[in-house]
Length: 213
Ligand code: SAH
Image (tube, rainbow, N blue to C red):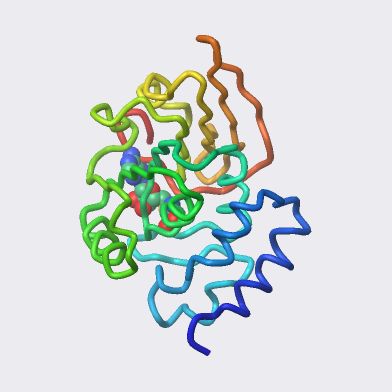
C-alpha cells in the first residue's frame, strides 16, 4: 500500500464532501497531496483520519477538513499569489501549490523551518517560497498578495498583513481573545474597503510574534 491513495479518496468522500467542500481544485489537491509524507512515519497510519496530527515542537497540521475549508474560503484561481503564515509541515502550502497558486510561506521556528525546507525539496515542492521570520510582519518584499492564509491563532488581525493584502484580496485567519479558541474570519478588501465575515469556532495553535501572542 504505497501511496495511501485509497485512504485519501475515502477522506475526501467521508470528511470533505459531506461538509460542503465542493471546489474542484480543492478536492483535486486534497486527493493528490500525500499528507502522510509531511509527518513522522509512526503517525502515517493515522494521517488521513478526521483529526489534527502532531508535527513536533508542540505544533500540529489541522484536520483535513479544516485545511480544505480554509483553502476553499480563499476563492482562489490559478496564478494568484498567496501568503501563508505558519508553514509548519508544509502540507497546507503543498495543497495551495497544487491549486495552481504562487505560494509564499513563513515559519518562525528554525528547526521546523529547516526540516520542512528539506522535505519540500524531497517531495518536489521546491517552487514554494519559504522564509524563517515572524509572519505577523508579513513578507513586505513580495507583497501585495492576492490571498493570505494564517494557520495559527492570535487575538487580532495583524495590521501588516492587512496592508500587504492586494485590492481586491481575501484573507482567511482564525482570531480569538482566548488561546486555542478562535472564530474563523474571512476579510475581503475591495475598492479600498475591508469587510469581515465571522464563521465557525476553531482551535488553532498560538500565533506568536509582534502582532500575535
Ligand atoms: N500550516 C501548517 C500547520 C501550522 S501549525 C501545516 O500545514 O503543517 C502553526 C504553525 O505556525 C507552527 O509551525 C508555528 O510555529 C507557526 N507560527 C506561529 N506563529 C508564527 C509566526 N508569527 N510566524 C510564522 N509562523 C508562526
